[in-house]
Length: 151
Image 1: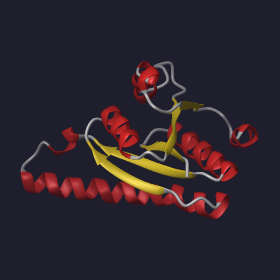
Image 2 (image 1 turned 120 degrees about the vertical axis):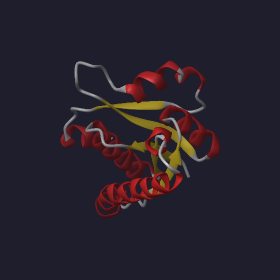
Image 3 (image 1 turned 90 degrees about the vertical axis):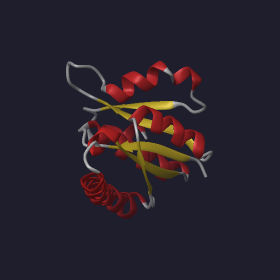
Image 4 (image 1 turned 90 degrees about the horizontal axis):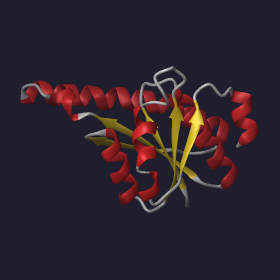
């Protein structure tokens, strides 16, 4: 089964990327894999404190994921998978694509501020030519109706 890989983070544009991935998966019989990346610099404390912080980060990710997962299951009949990795976001995205041969498309949300599309879009489009799968970039200010119409 072809899966759409989407990155879970705290950005506003993440919402449209999630919606797009779920809608495309529902319309094509595919799946959704949600990747959350915990940056390593969050745990540069004593070992015990770092372990507690790591566990708290995982709990936040699971809670955040469940909001999207419930919508995907209830509205789109897609049961997403959650993958949590630790490291630099771009490196971990590329490694996840390499590790899971069922991933067919990377879906990213583009930011809407005057600062540009966001660090993931900026960095990953630079290496798009060497990725083994296409990248779909979803505009962050696309409304729900328009998203539904194009998927």
